[in-house]
Structure formats: C-alpha cells, structure tokens
Image 1 (cartoon, rainbow, N blue to C red):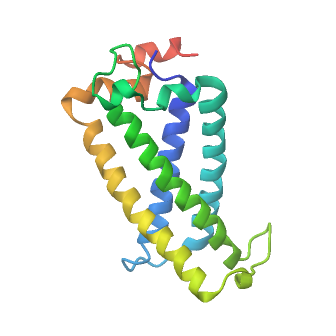
Image 2 (cartoon, helix red, strand yellow):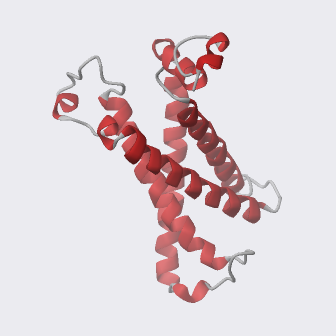
Length: 182
C-alpha cells in the first residue's frame, strides 16, 4: 500500500479546492461574471482546514522524516526502499511553501470582506502593505498554476503510471483492490 485512503482523500479534496480557488480567482479576470468572492473565501477556509489535517498526519502519523530530503537524496543516490525520491520531496516542499504563502496572504485578505464569522476591517493594513499582500498572493497563485500543470504532466508520463494508479487505488493495481484499503 503506497497511499492510505485518508491520504488519497486529502490529495483529491485539496486538488478540488485548489481548482475551485484557481477558477474563482482567474475566471472573473477572463470576463466570466459570477459572484466569486463567497465561493473563493469558503474554499480557502476549507483548504486551511485540509492543510491542518495534512500537517497533523504528516507529523503524528507518518513522521516528517518521510518527506525531508537527505544527504543521499542530494547526491541522487536515494535508497530504493524510500517511498519518495528527491524530486517528489522537493516538489512537495515547493508546493507547500507556495500554498503557505497563499493561505497566509489569503487569510489576511479576508479582513476585507464581510462573512458570517466576522465584519470587514480593511484598515488593519496600510495601502502600501495591502499592495504587498496582493502581490505575494498573485505571484504565488501564478506559481501554483505552473506547479499544478507540472504535476498533471508528470502524473500522465508512462514511467509514472504506477504512481498515478497508487494515488487512485492506494497501490499500482486496479479497482478490485480498493476494497482491501483500510
């Protein structure tokens, strides 16, 4: 079993939330008119909850050691028993950093909207600081699009087909093995 059901569910829920966030952010720029702000901030809050869940599993269930690059990784001589190679580890840390920047800046930006949970207060930052927050959020969004496309590209390469299958079924197999997943 390469990926447990809980980890696969997190992956696909996070993927769905990221697609919703990218869609609600960029479709209005492309001229598609709809009330995108409520969908965007709710998906952002759900993503924060999903990331907290992921961090809990990464620290307390799997252990951070699984995703930390090692000296052997840097020499490109990873032991075959390792679950993730250096490229996967570095990709994960890169995306994690980008998403963290998005979550922090998005959380700050939520001060500018009214929600059932709080009233808007855009005065928490100066115009200059709001510009920095928006610039970081926009730049990180563009980077996330790049990494998303990269992720999809590598997932469909023939040599990575077993990794894609394991993210769907838990191991490189077929639908018949999904019942054995715990």
